[in-house]
Amino acid sequence: MSSETPPKDLATRAGWIGAIFIVLGVALAYTNSVHGVYVLDDFGSIADNRSIHHPGTALFPPGEGRTVSGRPLLNLSFALNYAWGRESIAGYHVVNVAIHALAALALFGIVRRTLELPALAPRWAERADPAAALIALIWALHPLQTESVTYVVQRAESLAGLMILLTIYCFVRGVTPGASARWLDASIALSLVSALAKETAVILPILLLLFDRLLVTPSWAEIARRRGIVYLGLALNWLIICWNLAGTGGRGGTAGFGTSVSHFDYAMKQLEAIPHYLRLAFWPSPLILDYGTSTAVTPTKAAIGLVVIAGLLLAGFLARKRRPGFAFLVAAFFLALGPTSSFVPVATQVMAEHRMYLPLAAVVVAAVLALFEGMPVIVPPLALMVAIAAGFATVHRNRDYASQVVLWTQCLAVPENTRAELNLSQALIDAGRSAEAIPHCQALLRLDPHSAEAHNNWGNALVELNRLDEACAQFDLALREKPGLAIAHFNLGNTLMKLQRVSEAIAQYHATVRVAPGHSRAHANLGNALVEQGDLRGARAEFETAIRLTPENPTPHLRLGGVLMVTGDVRQAIAEFETAVQLDPGNAEAARKLAAARAYGSTPH
Image 1 (cartoon, rainbow, N blue to C red):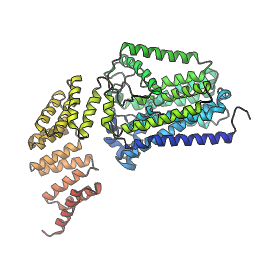
Image 2: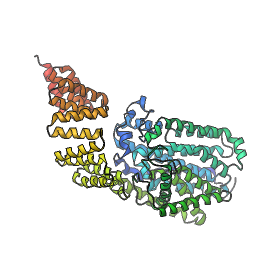
Image 3: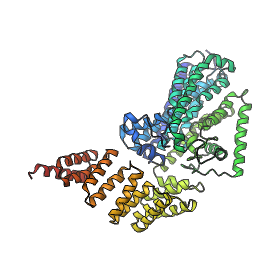
């Protein structure tokens, strides 16, 4: 046995100890994440995503540019969450934390196995276990990862990251001397599965090819001879990704060269973004949920970014012979960022911290291994202290996700962030702080004078303040800026009902369902308005439509039961009241009406 390789039983024991520390660390750092609320894209991809309600549609996500669009594995994972706990957000958070813990374990395994490869073993085999454990722990507890874990819908990033890391792990096992070919078969299978989670899996064939050439196989010809068929199998994930993307229409027009953002402007913005991400890797403050959509970048920031990026690429290229591990890490960092942070525009997110989920691993590996080479004695306690500090920072950041007001207030640190102003105004209204919301609507209109959404939120704030006539004026302005804005028609209809202007409200509800036929609440409220006018037949039709659209909502069942009682269909009314009670056992009105209907039905007439 080589003196450079630890005994097998000691290595196994160290591996288990490292894995336990990683899982416990993740669990402790993210325990408070279960209190997080739905934010931003969570609503479209989870709360309002009916495809996750039924097993038959779970693998067919909506294609309107939502986060789940073109990502069937992600959609399926949300469907499983829905099956277990319906809309309870805690379950979604628990699964996100579990995915992140598994990804950390996969990274632990990758680093251990890589450091034990023949090319690196003479220098690293004896330190592989502690180095790998500390790397995975720092990566897992780093607060920059919170957006990919605590922001529920960014499971897209962590799930894809897990699948990519598992693919790499199997590949590393497969290229280890004496390994079974089944490991490479597993890597191909996982590569194909990862393509169903997110498009970032497109990097796998190239990433693994570079790994093979820099750290395992001495020539391209030998790679082609020994593993050419493996790379063909890995590259099949490109076909899956292209197929999924084709079905989304450029992710609803939000990504690709057909968006409102030019590829040049987007690439220039990335010259600012990438150095910013690197700074956050070493000093993760402030963390921002949303950086807005502006591609403006100062010449100074662009020049600094160009120097940083070019310098890293040059350093990686020059290191390819003497320091192939460092060369690979540089390549891995830029490859992992490439799909979202190069020249292919993502119009709705020009910068995003969750994009560092996998690239951060390359940064942490490079930093920790460099320290191990320079200060081997003090690195373990130093790295452990860093991991603990990172864990506390993650706990602190998770608290922010319990309040949309806090999250969106932080986003105002980004200049001219129109989305932050809009969402902060809505968050303040939802928090019962409507008077505070109005200045943010006004600020948004200064940035974008034609923002229909700003007028709509302003109207909502005025409704909460009982300034109903002023609210109607704001909703009218919203519809003037964006005719056919369904939510403005709906809100105007609700306000008119409060003013007892029933006929006008009915017109607004009809306008809402013309634009958005699937708007269940509009159909239900239209039914209520028709009841006010005595049109019970029309009301019944609207309530039945609302039930068809959202059968799990007890309110339309309750209202339909009331109409059926008036029209004399007592038996069917009782059935509707029973359904309402089953859907909401604590609904006192439904229980009272059910008891009254049963009493009425049992009395001779």
